Each structure stands twice: as structure tokens, then as C-alpha cells.
Amino acid sequence: MGLKYLDFLWALDFLYRYYPKYHSNELLILADDIFKWINNELPEDSSTLIYLKSCFNSPYEALTAVWKEILLLAGPFIRQN
View 1 (cartoon, rainbow, N blue to C red):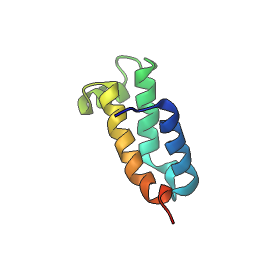
View 2 (tube, rainbow, N blue to C red):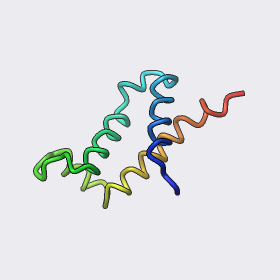
View 3 (cartoon, rainbow, N blue to C red):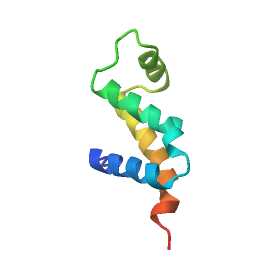
View 4 (spheres, rainbow, N blue to C red):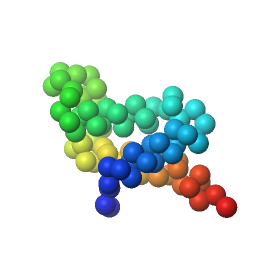
């Protein structure tokens, strides 16, 4: 899967605009936490980091999982006739 950062941001922006109540969706919060993990912005003793490491083996795995979920949510809106 060739995940591109700009594609990821585009999909998040698309969902924010067209998916009802997406701004309050926990998926957006999870994506933000994953980006903080990737950028080493979370302290080692952070409960967020501990949670992410308990769910995913790596930041890439976490990002891939969130990306797939975003594509599932955005799909119906992207392919409207």
C-alpha cells in the first residue's frame, strides 16, 4: 500500500467537510495521536503512547489501520453519482 501523507490529509479533510459529526470522531483523535507517535512528540510514560503500543506493533501499522478505516468512511462520499 503506497500511503502518501498528502492523500491521508486529503481524506481527513474530505471527511471533516462531508461526514456528519466527523470533527468529534475518535478516529481523528487517533490519527492525531499516531502522528505525534511518528514524530516522537509523546513522552515515554504517556498513557497515549502506552495505549498505542498495546494496540499496534509500530507507528506504520497504526497509520495503515487508520488509513483503511478512513478509506472505508470516505468511500461512499467519494464515489457519489
